[in-house]
Length: 290
Image (cartoon, helix red, strand yellow):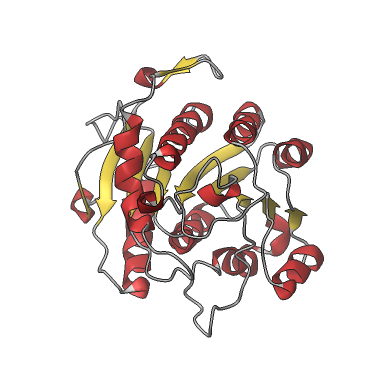
């Protein structure tokens, strides 16, 4: 793998400097070129890392410490500003290398479109892949104002690539009538408004399967995470999102990659959003990387 595809800056707490010995690789995708409302998520990866220094190393939820887990932080990918297509190619190339080295990719966004090339690469390695998607929005548009490369489209692209029955969506509370109809009629496992309880009902059917988990921070209510580009009232609490992450961790699914996207710190002077995001990342690392 060519580590010079990324540059090192601040790193997530307790990251190892030994790539070869690491089981997972954190990388930032600082792109927000296609957002439909407020930009700023390109600054999310750096602020999540900075907020991580305030975390305890030990998780009382999982009775595990991140000092006992080997993961490498490759820094943020160097993406050409304003060039979405080239940026997606760079992300795909990087993730392809991580997967070739049999490591788990852990992405920090960035807008949600950055998940699309990652899903493509993970699907190539795991053709029986399922996606667990937490979000306020369906992300099921075919295009946004005529542009297919949009943060409104990644899950529609994934459904068309993998088949909609392999997509599991939770917490959705916003979308066009067309998106909503597609979600309900296409075969997607669609669970609007709620997260933890419907997830627990679905997890037994995913036992043994490779799963990619993607979290848009706006699945949380704006009171818990105001620092995002497209806030939506009526979301879940951080406690419920942690409950969902832990349910996945304790299930029989095989998490082969995950990301957390859409943290836009400029809209949150309290820094609550990157602080919450960093804890979610810690719990996913401890729960998903065995």
